[in-house]
Length: 318
Image (tube, rainbow, N blue to C red; front, side):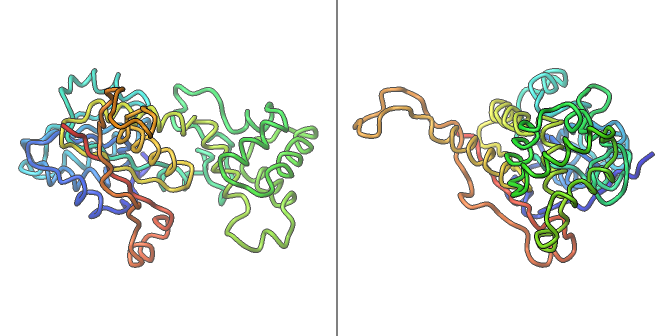
């Protein structure tokens, strides 16, 4: 079995903000190898409840092994659920949860998924262009996008989901390459991207394929729609005083988190010049930190993948 483990990002900051207590119910919406949930379990203890959600059965198995190995006094009641947090309502209904005191979303792909060539998420090792978070239920792959989408759609996806300056040129080169043979491997795509981006532009800003791979992953998994849906569900399930902590890694995700939190914190739809509120829509949450919390320099040095992380938190109002 894959050793599903990665270094949890912003670990002390997350749990300082969530302020879990021993009787609480906590949902780790992106369980992975339980890096964050191990700390949550210690805070909850035997009288708390920990619900972990993940699409990957290997992650769930690895997480269960680690959590069940904790001493009895540090082991809360466990409910590990296979699924996508975009289907939060269905998952929590199946677990018969009355309410939740804390949610954690650690958005993005785990280090294990990136480093496993057969998953196709990474550009550093050759593998099939898959990129599905849940191959068992999803049908669309990155190879499908590259081989069957129009040039205009490929341009839109790369530009919108990654701010890639050379999006139209990459799409043009993709369409030209697929006329000769199907694009099925990450190595093929990396070479196409390198050919499309001028050498002078490739020398700055990290690996030239990074942004395109990110954009394809978002498209294949519908990540932005899923994130919005999951956050709105979490707000509904949250008990008064409960908190949601979200770690995002690029501007598109961070913007969605910020917009959803602000939308539920500012529900009034009355014209701004109206002296009193007439719509009756009250705030549902308060935004705890107007500016995102970011990793310390020491954490980035220990774990370079934490570099772009941003933590936002909201609290459910009574």
